[in-house]
Image 1 (cartoon, rainbow, N blue to C red):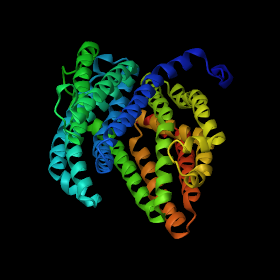
Image 2: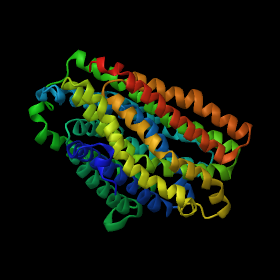
Image 3: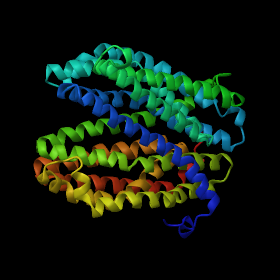
Image 4: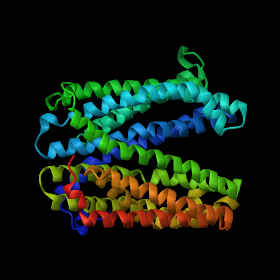
Length: 448
């Protein structure tokens, strides 16, 4: 393995990066394991159940994305207060994030639970799929604002360099989720057999138990910092919304962009949609290290600004990128060298594997650049540049990438390789734009 010293990093900075990033990455990988196990269990109920749960999960992701954006605001403000030495106030952003998650999430969840059958009927045709998906979506929405609270806790634990609490809680929550689904889906160990309703209910119960665990940990570790002891002032609430709302809108448009992408690729052909679906799933797993390292960069840059050291804040995402490059290189090489072996795990038809081979190789080759872009994006969120990140993300995805995909795919007929070249080009250009923004250092003057 490459030594970090080859990249010009000292041991202390490398340790700070890994201490923050690895627990977050571990938690994200645990989520993917949970998703795979859930899919395997629901798959035993039949294709209608699997299709309904798949679409409902995506709709739930879109609903949660809006309040999940508050996490970046909590992290930015808590990291800045920590860097300023104002530890007694560092939990106030967390208090605000928890309150806003409830204030926004409860009425939104109630509305969506009421409308779940109509929403599913609008996106799916098969009545059996609509029925199964509606029940699952309603059960998942029972924990919608608890998910928002969990993201706020993640932002806080990351900001104060206690990300290990996030990892341990998430691992326990996911293990409980798998156990409850095993019992409630199939009626094992004396539990009622609830099918897809049990799958959604088991997940919501596990999320709520995880939320209660976070509250217990907050009471133990964050009371000296003001946890649940006083609420943010009107100005602090306003600052939290000012930082969190752009990130929430960005998350909502980003998830909506995937819906639009599936619609566009579906116009090209069913086989192309199947291949792109696999490529996207591989891509989403592959960017997890970048997200973890990005959240580390957000904390480190935010704390450095709080300490009045903009030069150190400027260095952090580049130093984080150097460490992340080692991990991303290890992920990208197999995609470039063994694309057939990877794709054949998901696509049994040789012609579909051949259709996606070059696209996966290109993705592996561009993984480091894409990762640096994600790290810079999170770093900008960490220093309070949420509006700028929102403008770049939405503009690049909706005004450039999606129109280009429509032309390349349905209009010009360049297929999967052409579509994926557009994806790589958009992500690479976004990374370059974010790098230029970071180097201009206008973010130094943002107050949070």
